[in-house]
Length: 432
Ligand SMILES: [Fe+2]
Image 1 (tube, rainbow, N blue to C red):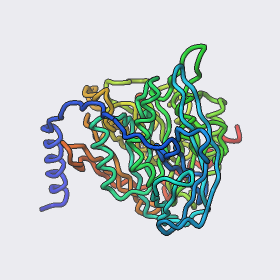
Image 2 (image 1 turned 180 degrees about the horizontal axis):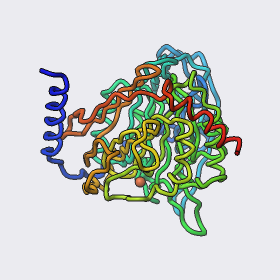
Image 3 (image 1 turned 135 degrees about the horizontal axis):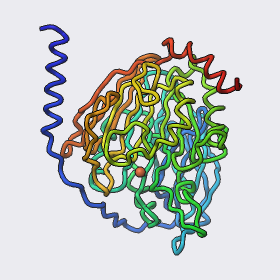
């Protein structure tokens, strides 16, 4: 049979399978009745990349005098290194957080398992550092929340061999109820203490109260990301590099207009990207720019208008967003039109939160939209080498992860786009 015919048949079968899929209902918020532990017991342990060969370990203790100390080494129970860090806490109306510890460890070997414990006692945790070279795999899931579907998504992510988790906003769905930040931290600890979780914020992290509370206080206190390490003045936008990828995390809810702090930082960060060292250029933020779901239509337009020219000039390969509780993947696109030098945009706000799915789509499907489906699930992005990446989206089909969308993506690194746009980028950076 002709290969094209086989492909056409495969696509037809896939499309039929998608349309016949019956989605199970939204699941309840999980119940977290925890056995009480000592006040110095580390809770909500999670790790994040913190500059070259370093990792930040974050955790919470009820005991305000507990030390922000991490002991670590490459053999279980034998800790040849000790690092001391910093701590913070916050109050929010009648809630007072525990002591939130952030301790940077390293330098660490690449692609190596480390054993560690927090505060000089308690249980031993195990992490693996990412590789220095390809291949590297990212797990991607946004809008997680803490329902039975969140658990299902996390279980599926745990089954995949990944190096770093990327989260394009909306973590706990605490929505002002601060104890839900604590239960979310406990829910994700088994995964987030073992692989770095790199997150950016969504609307559910904002939690501002006029005249009383600025936004993102809980998020910034608990999920400290490497903004200082990447020359940013705000935890709401930063970048990091891992195994041949430069990854930029932007804030959809902080100023993005031309010459705002975030805009200026983004422009400077893009100018520093060396595609020989990091052939892949990825960007994450919460509100999608290309979205054919009826939910949250046009919410990302203003940010897109301000920042898409910068991303285009820098030949960004892939943009990952959340917010819409469904999955959608585009062709390479720019300024609303198909463009071989634009980015592939993926909306993956279907981690499993309590608000349920966004099931209504606009018709006809725009030319740039390749695949769209309202189901819970997660994505996996494997950067195989400097030019080829394999993206797959795994639907939570009852409790089995079913690979429902998949595509090879070729990076723009060796394309004419990069060569042509170098001049344009310089023009943007240096003025006319
Ligand atoms: Fe959102």
